[in-house]
Image (cartoon, rainbow, N blue to C red):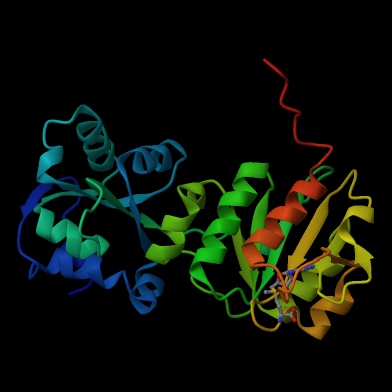
Length: 282
Ligand code: SAM
């Protein structure tokens, strides 16, 4: 029986057993194979689930712990899920822990449909900044980058080649909710190179052997495409030569390189230096 057949939309079910087929299906989403098959992912937290619903994400299942019964916001999330044709499960703490793989799970978990934006739909405009990640492997790095892209108001992330899954539990957690705000696209290297050809702005790669200090580049008025390399190998040669500029962030200590998430943050704040509002003294 498929997950879709097991779901009876619009009903609230009480579940206490880990052997329940619905629970088994949700727990299977910890594995990429099942996330890919179902095109779904798990996000934890009541506020985050409500924000995702506000932003128009499609919820398939809302799961809440028994302690959430009677909580006005939980009831609101449940009512919205039912209204959207989703399933609502009230579960025991044991079931919630098993789904989230945590001892102290959040009270609410949502199963949402994955979303990718096709590259062809991206229309970079003046002032826009996009980040492309070459074979990013670490879920924490990817989550941190998605969160930072959201924080600075950049427009999206393009995943190039074999990347870690942005919809894994670990990455989604590290995004702190930004998974619902930052458009994600994915492509292989050839697809990226073709798309990059038509990119109407400056394409800046980062490289330890970069020829220019990142602070000497004029990033205005954009759009800017920032290209970041793999944690172990850096950028492939093909990606590096495709960039208009290769920027280097200076280092003074003994570290070989910066962490990918940190390097992306440093670059984004420099690129957006003139576009992020200055915080006024109170
Ligand atoms: N051994 C790898 C190499 O030789 O490129 C180190 C990769 S580094 C951990 C991961 C990515 O972070 C790099 O590909 C680059 O995009 C960025 N990065 C890290 N430190 C950097 C620096 N000092 N200047 C420019 N980019 C940097």
